[in-house]
Length: 567
Ligand code: ADP
Figure 1 (spheres, rainbow, N blue to C red):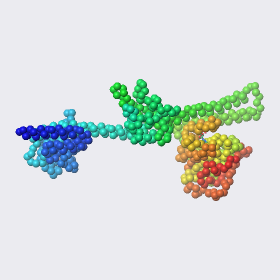
Figure 2: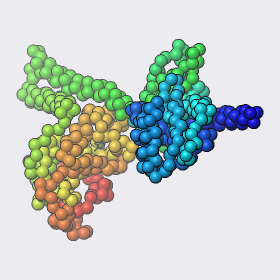
Figure 3: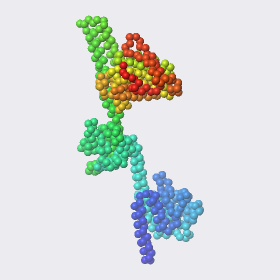
Figure 4: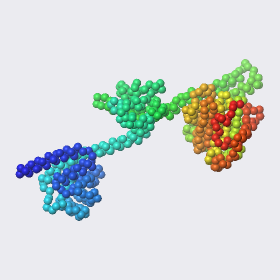
């Protein structure tokens, strides 16, 4: 009797030890395997299984001991049988045994109950005849089952928390915005991919560093806002402070960013952690700056011709003056010229706003390039002055293009007008056309002031003007190239610039050919070394300027060398 008591005591002690070990585990499959191994062992069974109820109400085998996985589905009917229906359970047990070819003669089944909810059932089976489970053994299993239920619930809870965390991590990682999480000492604990791209900092290096070091947002004057006015330390605390400013990325870019913070505070109001959403708003910033510049430029641009017109008109209309015919003619000519300029400016503005509202509408047709280039030169040559020489390098038989004639004329006029405007000392303005695959490349080159490399990409932005001496001296609102790019791209082409400061610029754009030809092969090739016959149109000719074409340059015209010395 004493011996039996001792044995039960030992059993209880080992049960307690095992239960503790199981409860300490958080990995669900490990907990379940351990529980079923121990349960089978405890009841001296031959096999056993744990079935858990899923969220959808279906009970399914999660772990087993002494039963191959492929046999688990055979237990479905048994699992669906209520535990208080003994005859049905006995029948199902025999059926499963026959199904899997294994004697399953006795079964002890105990529900796993946690907070009054049955989360699953432990089944232990014996194969031998006449060794039924005793009430004591069931009681032992019950005590174990209570502990096991806690362990299983904990592990399930942990698993779902882990899943949630992984989900959240994936959301943060894949967010298009830069996201970083800071600890109570403003050190970075999470740094997503967008943040790496934005700042140029690899996350391994960013994590653990103060946020003011990695995301050093500063004012245009260079003051680090995060150090002088940390948004998370403002008094009184703001719920969602926002900081905007410039950052110098680790890989040498300069970006304007907006960072929004959400701080988490403890019960006493102490800062615990924060999440920051960081966005690159450089484009918007530049746009806003340009809008401002634009307003000042445009008001100047529009006001100048208006005041000239007004001045001339008032002078000519004076009652006390008797103007001779020549003075009247000259004065009226100025008025017409300034009115034209004003109309042109307004048209440009309308064009831009139309473009923004509904894109570029094209009227495509086939037409030859040379007559258009001639027409543009004829328009500009007379007003350009003697210091300019115009050259056309387009062969007479250059194949027709398929594009919007009027729009392309606008592009060419913008480029030729710029070539003149930005060549204060004059020089050669040359228009060339050459073939490249299924399109033509039209280029306008000059010997003007040129454009620094860092400015070249920005020229095609709306309202952009290079900040140089000529910016103030020349009229312009920074719209010509923006419009030109929109037109060229709407026709499926591209526009670009090659330039060297102080030496000149060449603007090129592509146009689709009416009938694609095989590149250079179909074009006459100039004999090497033979100087091209260069018809030259001088400014302000007395008669109609004669503009002839020359053979094409078979390769891209070098930017400066072939311009030769200035006339
Ligand atoms: P705008 O000439 O009215 O200012 P554009 O959009 O035509 O506007 O050109 C934008 C800027 O690009 C100009 O302000 C000028 O700084 C620069 N640019 C354009 N063409 C040339 C050129 N041929 N040579 C030098 N700079 C140029």
